[in-house]
Image (cartoon, rainbow, N blue to C red; front, side, top):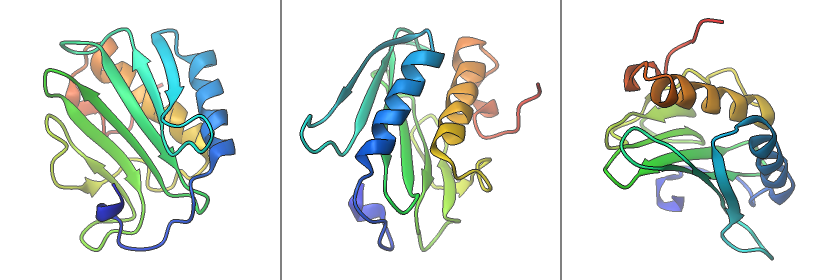
Length: 146
């Protein structure tokens, strides 16, 4: 991921990662397990889900102290997308890499959303609409009703 960054984002914010983990565990019943890549100095929160489009899915989440973030979703059968906020020369700071393969970035539906709890809720809501509610991958980067 660091090769993709065009500017400084600061160190990983472990307190925010812990808050995101707690929120995900409280609010998403399809979370099977959460873990940190390193218990002493985590740089990534991994959220394993019990379902996906074809296989179980997982989010790999990083939040940096200057408000940059990465919510990367993958499934073994090839579905891959990502919501990011970080300086990037060829995209808006908040951008979306669309499925099925996390293609070139486009403007994110999260342009004005910067709080970790809100970003997490929106990403989970988009994932749930697209995959669990079977509205399709096209709704991932759109404003949802209700």
